[in-house]
Image (cartoon, rainbow, N blue to C red; front, side, top):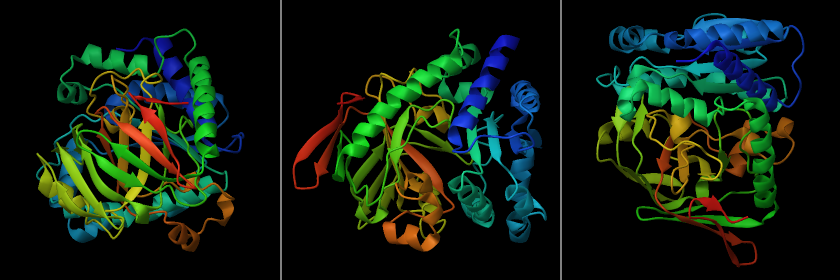
Length: 399
């Protein structure tokens, strides 16, 4: 599906993402974890070679196959599922980067697994993400990820595999002469939008569509981020709000695959910052169990908007990386229940400890689940002083 020059271009695009996502430059000898699914081996080999050329030390990790992952949760005891091998903390405390290549050979193999076991494993390994977050705050770590086309994802999206691969190539600008140059242009365009949003004294945001009427409170010392290199592709502009100010109803009209489960028509009602009612047209029991994974799982960790003029994604892809960046006719809004992003803190990152995060309303959880709304919507900001300003309408920012 990918010619040698396209593999090289994909690897170079990921390198752009990795160096853009980290505030300090990489130096010879830095360690980068290359984590990938088996089907992504051709791209993994291209990325591995590029990292060596850059003078870095790649650490290769193959993800569990669907059969291994199913057995892990089905046959593993609670102790086995929660076990973290010796050396994992040491490895993550000495990593300078992470590149993840997502290429699932199955999307539904965990459908019969008890979601509580999945939650147990996530909670047990949360400390590794905390290690990465702290290193990223100090400028010692950066990460990026991408997707590789698989038959499972194409079938779930209702697309021929060739068309699915073409969507990935178009979304990542791999069909253009200079993909990295195009990402640099988009980076500049997104920065203009972020500068505009960050200049506004926004007290709250109200999202209104056919199925959504949600109010979100950005909170103190926040900044909008996006097109930061973390995801390839990424067109979203987002922040992590003060979870305590969330109220109203949010409807995810786009389906979602998570932990081997298909979920459709999720509808969440928030009161005083937490989900009080959760329903779904399909997968409702799974949704409810995910939202009780830990204390923060039923709170808002992210609020995001995608401008349809930036995104070239025009189809449902059955993959969160692409679906949360859907352009289409109306762009998209997505929220994530669960963990917030500490890098949306507008102050000195080195001062943001757990106590300060809690005081500012940054949510903490082992869960981070993006739920996407693609309906035509209006997003209105209530500004300090009481005036209002429409920020987003007809799938694009008003700037």
